Length: 127
Image 1 (spheres, rainbow, N blue to C red):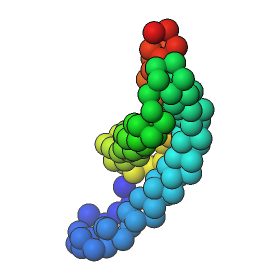
Image 2: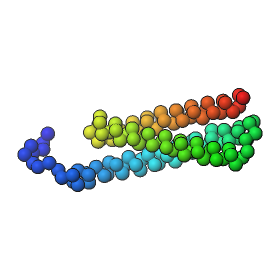
Image 3: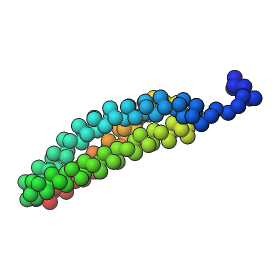
Image 4: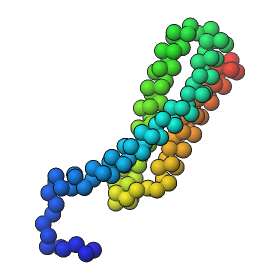
């Protein structure tokens, strides 16, 4: 509270300029995590493709098209992580970093995604 109460409010462009480094930090941090997310989900994804083609007799081309759609959907769902961090920082932390909160959000999303793949793998191998 050392700010001058009689000072004029910041112009919109000045406020936007002060928020850019925080937004850049969020985007770069989550893009690094996207590589890990895709690498980790690649393993069960390949298991599902093998199951579709060998156990269920799905043509390889069709299985690869389905896998591409699932990959696009998974990466779209990944965007919930940066959105959650942005809202949490804006609403509860006054823009300050979450610390290990980003990894907590990432881990929770990864567990949910792995759960979806586990259901798919169980459906392929148990049928």
